[in-house]
Image (tube, one colour):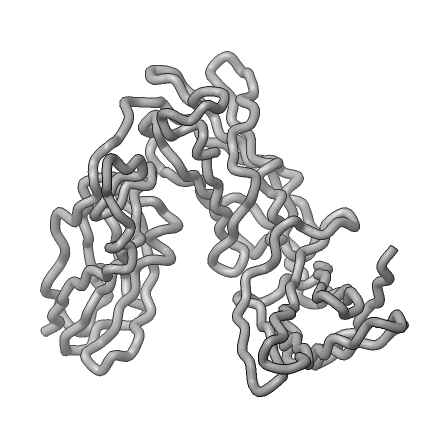
Length: 351
């Protein structure tokens, strides 16, 4: 059995502990929230990589935490893409190195008095297409970024029966743990895949329930369970289009930019796939709101200054069924992925 050793974390992460005779030490340094995890390689042909895994119930997750790698000479360093959650444990693994268990303590002074609750369940509408691919749960506070969170989100039909095997068995988190992304198992959406059939039947109602056992980043359970009931309509098989967008606004105001789409936008795709810069190329901060699901409101964090702005929409942007600007989720014939990175730019003038 491999041996774990713990790390004490102050302003930096410093690790020490017993090592096997053939195992080397993983160097861990940097800030509390974004540690640098480095290995000393044995030359340019050495392809060893450190990987970080979330630990729940004393078991490491099957997939590693997303991050960035940077190599300098024979030193390879890994940095998590997002800050590590306080109060959680993470396992560092690398071939030929001792497994290292990082224990990130929670600051009791920062634990909120009011438990987290569900702020919204997306889509916001009461109707969804039969072939919907994504649902999202937004929380009032940062949650534990547990990849097993899908097990605590349930769908029931209008007879009260639980629909089993609904989700792709991995949870995705955005917005520093405040937004949970849930994907219907693709085998239950795409035609021609021999799985166990679709999740939804047209004309019936279904309820999505977020269980109160979900925990925030400090280990506190949700204040209460939350649910949203949907009526299921016809399948949506139409490419996404931008119908219209605001082109002029007044300076000194915080009027939102309105982007109208032909279909209901996927909430997480909108959060991750839309950005804005001013005429100097500087990023402009804004909050994103959805109105009737297909209308997106981009409200600036500060009052508009005179000038020109560019709103950039990623080619990977998609609607709630996974349809994109240039192709459907269910591709036909020789449709390709070549335009997945093609950015669409909208011009805005503030006078």
